[in-house]
Image (tube, rainbow, N blue to C red):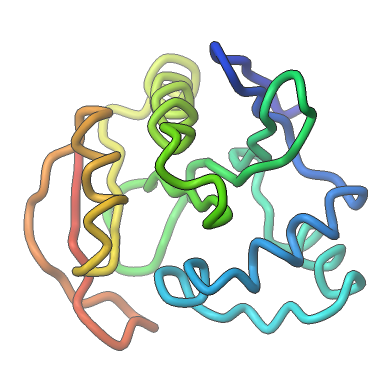
Length: 162
C-alpha cells in the first residue's frame, strides 16, 4: 500500500478515481502542458484511466489541509528513459503556485525516497526556462549538473541530482 504523508500545511495521499476531475484540470493546465507535455487527457473517463494506468505507487495527490482542496501532485518516477536514477517530479495548478507547496511536498517525498525506498541518488529534470521549478529543486538540496537530451523531449532538459 502506498504510504500517506502530512506536512505543516499539506496531506499527500495516493490519487483515486474520485480525483479524476482534479487530474483532468491539472493535466490540462497551461503550466502542465508547457513544462511536462500534453497527455491527451480530455474527459473524466480519460482522467480515470490515466490514474489507473499511469500513476505509480510513488506519486501522491497534494491536498491543502483544512480546506481538503487538491492543489497538485508530487512523487518519484521510478525509471524515466534517459536517466540513470529515479527522479522527483511535481506539478501544481497555477492558482496555487508561489505558496511554497512544491517545496513542502517535494521535501517530504525526497525524504521518503532516501529513508524508506533507500535511494542514494534522486534526479530531476525541468524545462530550461522553468526557473521556479529549478529553485524548488535547489531548496530541497538538488544541484544542477548539465543540460541533457532525453528521449521524447523536443529540447534539452535541465538535469539536477542529489
